[in-house]
Image (tube, rainbow, N blue to C red):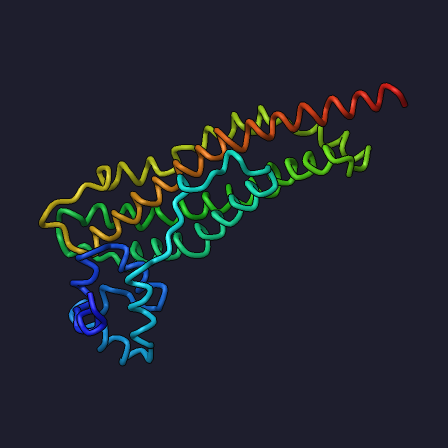
Length: 251
């Protein structure tokens, strides 16, 4: 599509073509449902934005697929950095976008009235619980693994390491982590598994698509932690314990 075609497209039509366009527009401060009847050029003029810049993003939105990364071959410190970056994207970008879609969701349709009411109650609670879980994971699990990684290289304080090994267990972390693996079950039930049909309003289709996509991202994220991070970390934990107790035996 050439630049002129992009400029003359109505916002509603752009989003109908690809729900990803709704997120790109959101990143530039454009809520698609507020400007659906205007062209991209008209909205940019109204908001003082450079239409060429937005077209570039619409043509090639940057999306790194987790499956494309050889994470299993990464050292554990890079895996932790990757996971922390993903947490940042979730908390600072994806959740605010979805929260805005839920907040501005006005059913105006008896089929969706109950869904609107329930989502507006449940989704903020989900966000609060999710963010708490993420920060707790970084403060406890990630901190412990980083300590193990440094200890495996001989960089540790004996007393602090002993305390960390006594207090923490990766087996326990892994078990607790599994209990958080279906965090969106309630939202899935409310939306009837994000089901839509030809009569479903565009706003709801975009919102359901984002919720479903986010759930899929969480599933991939959980697999990375369960199948790559935890096995590597458990091997590291065993190594550090052996090194520590071997040294303690000679002191």
